[in-house]
Image 1 (spheres, one colour):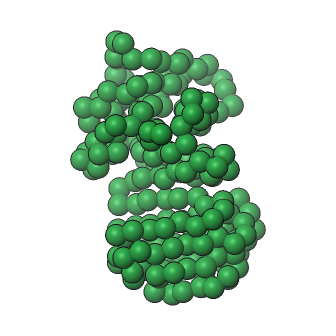
Image 2 (cartoon, helix red, strand yellow):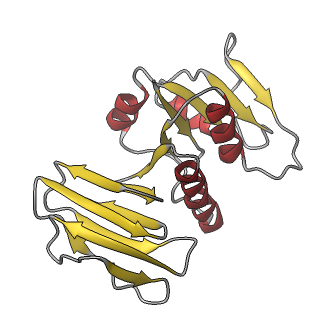
Image 3 (cartoon, helix red, strand yellow):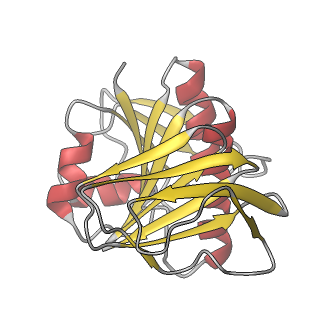
Length: 207
């Protein structure tokens, strides 16, 4: 199963990383994400949105779905639902973190949780940042030695986790939403794991 890459409207500075993610993937541009893709020489497989913010001309021969301006889903969320409908289970979200709208960044975290709740896997990638939502099982992290990692409950009052390969280990410890105990840990092993025993966990990794 190919990965589905969804590109939002926030500029992406790491062009090479973006091209690596998009190679051999099914690429969906969410509205203004078409401008980001065009600037990086990427031709999407699908374009979705109400096209209220896109500046680039829609490329000929590329499938597009035009959405109404007044709708319940964000363009990114619609793109995720459409990709799942088409059978995709692996997601990379680019250009959806940062920018001028904090509410849009938070909405992207909610979309990442939605992906996890559909028994799919997703990662939100920003400049020097990777974000995961874990709703069950474990997250194995390879080749991230020395990077900063933070873990928080998300969409739930608490989560119970264990850490392996981190500077400050935890064993079946409960993290609470009102206490940022899980902030700024460090990966100390070539392979590290976050094991989720209960709840939902938001995992943020920064270079």
